[in-house]
Amino acid sequence: MSRVSAVVVNWNAREDTRECIESLTNSDYPELDVILVDNASSDGSVEYLRSLFPRVTIVENLTNERFALGSNKGMRLALDRGAQCVFLFNNDAVVEKTTIGKLAEALEGTSGAGLVGPKILYSSRKDVIWSAGGEVNFWTGITRHRGIREKDAGQYDRSTEVGYLTGCALMARRELIAKIGFLDPSYHMYGEDADWCLRARKAGFGIVYVPDARVWHKVSLSTGGEFSAGKLYEKTRSNLLLLSRHARPYHWITIPFSSLFYLFRLFVQGIWRRNLDVPRTIVGALGDGVRKRDRHAK
Image (cartoon, rainbow, N blue to C red; front, side, top):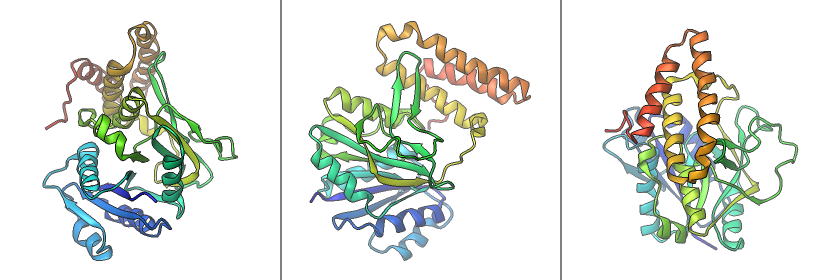
C-alpha cells in the first residue's frame, strides 16, 4: 500500500478548508497524511485549523505564493517524508471516503500511469458533472472539461486516458515528479495543471480518469463568471502561454481563427453589456501572453 500525502493550499478560506480537511481525515485510506500550505492568510486560518486538526502539518508562507508555488512547497515536503504518491486537492472541495484509496489503487494498478484523477461533481448539484477529465484541442486552441454541466447518468463511468486532469483533484506518482518536476508557477493562475499533464505525457506517462473515485467541488453552475475581468485575463493569458509551449507549428494554421473568434465574441458581448473591462482585459491578456509577461506577478 502506497503512502499518500494530500497537499491543500489555503488563502483566507478557513471554513471551506475546514470542510476539505475534514473529508480527507475521514478517508478510509490508512496511509494518508495531510499537508496544508497557508498563503499568509489574515483570517486566522492557521490558528483555527491547527486547533481542529492537530495531526495535520501546516506550512506557513510569509506571502501569498498562490496555487502553483504553494502546491510545490507542499509536494517537496511530502516527497522528503517518503510519500510514494501526492494528491493535490483544492480547498473548496470534499472527497468521498473511498476516493483516496481508489485513486491510489488505479495509480498502482495501471501500467505507465503517472497521474490519475476522479470524477468531480458540483457541490450544489451532486448529480451534475464539473469534470470527467479534460481535453486539449490544439486545432482550436480550446481546453475544456469533459461532461461539464451534464447530469451524471453514467455516461462517463469508464476509466480512460484523457488529455489532462484539473488541479482541483489529481494524484501524482513520485517517479513522475522526479522526472518532469513540479508545477510551473509562470502560469500564475489556470493552465499549470494542463501544462503538467502535457509534460507528463511527453515524458511517457499516462493520464488516467478514474470515475469511481468522486469529489464534490464548490463551483457555480452558472456560466456568468466568464465576465470577471480578473478571471478572463488569467485564462486568456495562461491559455496562450500553454499553446505557445505545447502546440505544434501546424496547429497555428487554425488556432488564431478559432481562438480569436471566441475572444471576439466575448469582446462584442462585453461592449454590448457596457462592460468595458472585458475588451480592455482581452487586449491586455493577449499582449501579455505574447510577451510572456504577467502584470500580476511580483
